Length: 152
Image (cartoon, rainbow, N blue to C red; front, side, top):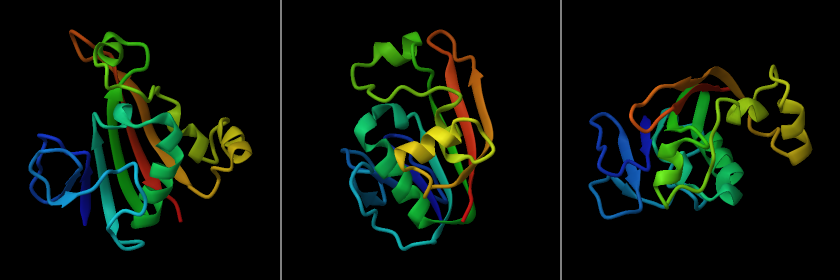
């Protein structure tokens, strides 16, 4: 199964489209609230397309822990967000969570920031960062793209 979390108007065939808003979705759920309505180890792909920046930073780890819970070992997670500090980030008053190309390094034991993640108590979520890249998105960009793999 594949999840499109916070789908909004980006309804995708082949995914379970999840959103709390007034939009077409397969599951009405606020992704900042646990638990998600999915079984442990049941998801093999997660998409967050311009969603993470709308999450309250205080809910970031809880959301990541819940995504980790529902994913199988080796599940792929793809995330796109406006780069923290960009015009695209600041233009939308609903943006709350700043995202950079190193945001997920806290969950990857091969990255230097993993030690900080352990201090924060985040080491029960293990991810491999395949890609953390700043990409142009004119005229507002840049954006940040992350490709992650769940390690269980």
